[in-house]
Length: 315
Image (tube, rainbow, N blue to C red; front, side):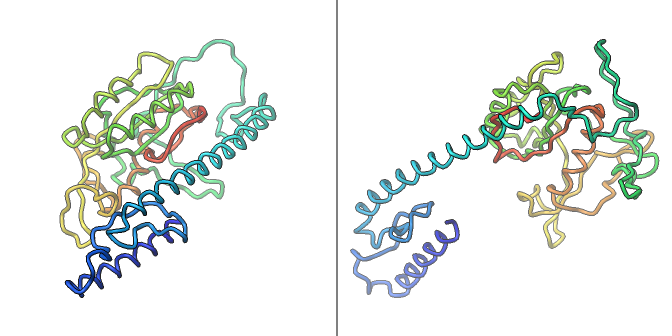
């Protein structure tokens, strides 16, 4: 539908361009310059623009009627999908009610049932991170190693504290309005989720209005229950494709390096050892750094933020 809409709007653009070339020769009642347009595909029988400025009123009435029809259709299709999903989830829960969901995780010791509550394990310092061996015995060095054998992680939360024994959702979410954070966090909280949410957000000077205050209100590390938000502010040095310096990531277009994330053994910052790359790539190093704050029993989920709305507890 989006492609069809673009094709129809290109036809309008061609008409407008032709009219501009013949300025003064077109009857004003037939002009298409400055006409209203629809941002939704309405079908082949109703164009996303009126045939002329004079016909705008009649077209707008038809457009609103069509949008109402499409909205009802969308609602019916969405309800059918949700009902189907709920049926699948009911069957899944019944089949897996007594399943051991830890199967497949890497345990050093056999499972032992212990009725005594366990104290959360403190995470090992980043400099002691071990290499990871894959199933085919390939050795993957930790991202930290590229900064040097004695490198350390300097990056700390701007606010909030990790709960090492909690599950966590890891999110790169810089530059968004408050409404984006609200829909993400509130829909998550409404599912009964109890765990951490780790955000990478813009530096305080670039944060949109109300974002910091809201996220701070959800920072809840003193309790083991409910949503607990931890936020990091990463400094980026970015470049255009031409190599020129750029202000910010350019919504992922520019290539960037992280500043003050890694340091030497004495704690002095070292340069980002990697070439400039899009933040969509660099964010995985942040996910790795954050993951070190959790126990091996924690479940971790990596998510985008703009297009996510929770209906069930993700874990």
